[in-house]
Image 1 (cartoon, rainbow, N blue to C red):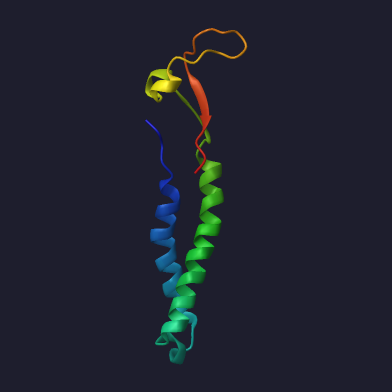
Image 2: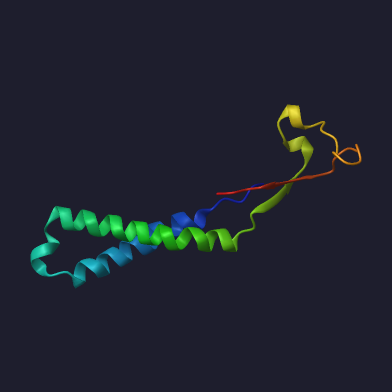
Length: 97
């Protein structure tokens, strides 16, 4: 079973609202009701959380994963090892994001 990158979603859904509320409290009262300021703060905080969370999640979860050839698409199930020509017990791939 493949692991997913829930860390980015968790960070965005928890850290972004908390940081946004702290930033809005730091603003002068006259600016809090302004929709453009609220939108700008929301966008800046969301960008900052994503900018910080994605590299941490990439560092925490392994990027290389193995799978059985039986779990692959039909055209890849019977591939052979390029050097030895033997059957493959497992294949390694880069999960990426």
